Image (cartoon, rainbow, N blue to C red; front, side, top):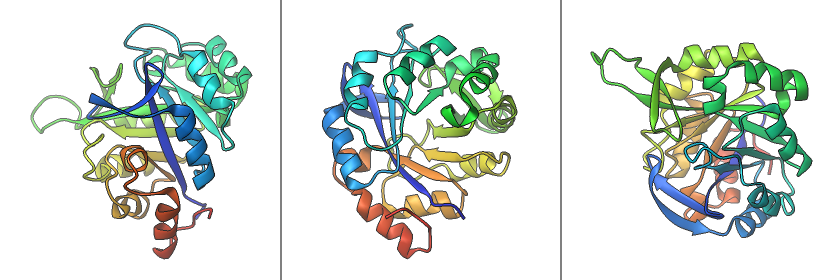
Length: 256
C-alpha cells in the first residue's frame, strides 16, 4: 500500500479561505497565504486551492490569488476553478502550480481531459467529481454527478464518468460528496468505494471529515488514496500531525 496523503483544501472566495455546508452558507475561515504556510509547516502532503465561484461567475481563475499562495507553498499544489482550456492550464503552470483540477469543464467538454493529458501528462491533471445521492424511484442515477459548484445536476452516473475520466487520461480523481460536504458526519463511503473499485488511478476522498475516525474509514473502508479536509484543519479541531499519527497507529502508511 502506498502512503496515504493528507490534503488540506483552500476554498477561495473574494481572496479569502471560506467553508460552508453542502456548498452553501459560507463563512470566513482564514487568509490563504497564512493557511498555506501553516499547512506546509505542519506536514501537509499536498494543497488544493479551489476558486469556488469562478465557474458560476463565468470567469477564469483569479491568477493573483493563486500567485500569492504559489509563492509560499513548499508542497505539491493543485488549483481548480474556472479552468476551461489548455491555455488556462499553461497560465497556472507558469505560476508554479503542480497540478490543475477541472470539473465542470471536463463534463461539458470531455475532450479537454485528453488534450490536457496529451499536452502536460496525466500526472499534472486532476478531474474533480462532485456527486450527490438520489432516492430510489427518482428515475435518476443513485450516484449522480453535479457541476457548477453543485448547482446543476447532469444525469451522469458517477462510476460511469469516473471510468471515462481515467480512460481519457486523467491522473487522479478528487471526489466530493455534496451531501456530506461540511457536515462533519463522515465521508460518503458508498460513493467513494464505488469509484475506487471502478478505477485504477488514485482517488482522493472529500466532503464530510469531522473526526479522526472518518479519515481512517475513507482509507480502510472506501480505499481512498488520499483524504482531503477543510473545516477540521481551518478551525483548529484536528492538526495534520495528529491526523498522520492517528492513521499510522491504525496501520495506515503515511509520510511523517
